[in-house]
Image (tube, rainbow, N blue to C red):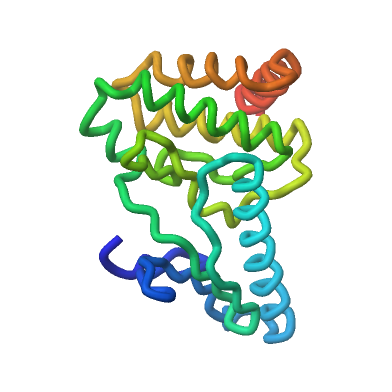
Length: 204
């Protein structure tokens, strides 16, 4: 990451923290909200994101380590993860799809087995690390104590990401899900929920 990235809810820019490469994510005030409500919302979302990152790491999922949390500024300083996004790597190296998709499957299985959902599970929110592991980033829309519905929605988002962003890799999502199902305790229930969510989209 070489410069600041500005999103709808937050800005992310590279910084240093105690001599280490880091990024700082700040949720700036929104003028269209009442100041008291705005402060409460930004603070709550900042605290929630830090907690999700921490709990995911405890579950064995590769996520950025949180270095500092400042609720008065609604900011998180976290580890800077070096590497390309999974999306960009798959675009330029489709021959790696099978290996990477199986790694994604294992990673997401760990996340969901800990009852955590990501909330915006796409290959743009995954960094391919130099050791071949996948790091999940931007968990601001996630939640802990996730229910089967949340997990199904996570998987449907990922499926749609593959169908739109990786159309030249028709078998990639199936390989990912094969690996995912082999690492969770309730594959039949999750598969049924995913199919239910697909069907809702077809008939609404």
